[in-house]
Length: 98
Image (cartoon, rainbow, N blue to C red; front, side, top):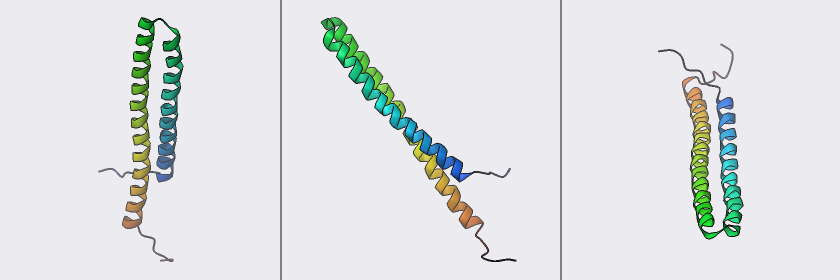
């Protein structure tokens, strides 16, 4: 089996970036819902209802994607910690020169 090499720092950094992106998607979902709710109030009832339904669907979709991206980031950060722990256990430092 080939050797597995992982740079935990890079993995942790990518995980942090993913969590930030997920949080930004969550904020975007709220902004879209707020913008479209303004349309619903100013439009005829039929259009307003359709706009409200669309806003709800967009918000639900964006929140679902953001949750997945945030989870991906958290998992990457956790994996970095596991790799570091395994490295410490499998390759403990010798504490001195041979």
